[in-house]
Length: 188
Image (cartoon, rainbow, N blue to C red; front, side):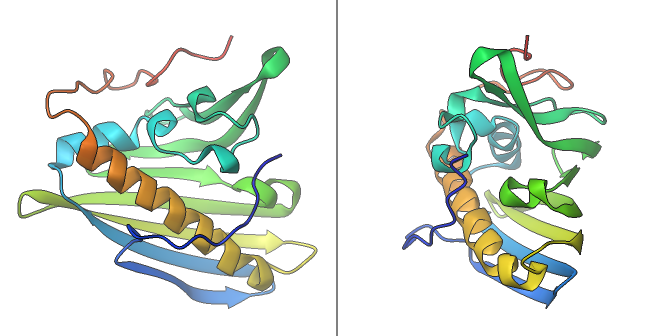
């Protein structure tokens, strides 16, 4: 797995990124970023993780293998070579173009006895969009969740920086996939 937990100097880092609570059995991360793009474009980009998720933080090493079926019970998943697959999370709440929530244990958390709720909200802000993220994780991790929280925060900050860049550079007339349909083809 390539979910290398590295800290990069980010020029497009979120305006706010913070581990707001942390203990050996839980953590809460909050982040926000202002995207210089209208909410519909930010939402369309969010729904297309293959366009912005860092390949170094995928199992296959190729972001093109990621997809998001943005409806309740939908999957944030990844295709693997040899017809394998990974579920990074499953969606439990979708309110286009304002909110998305999934149950997830991202990256190395997947091998631990934890569960998380990742909530992303979008609000118009002037001609742009304010995107806020909350990741609440609890359970048992052998190393202690308080030791993992700072690295998870760094990786999520990296992902938001890529999301911001992708939304801001996407063509204005780019159409989003139809609601309830994955941004790329389903896993076979």
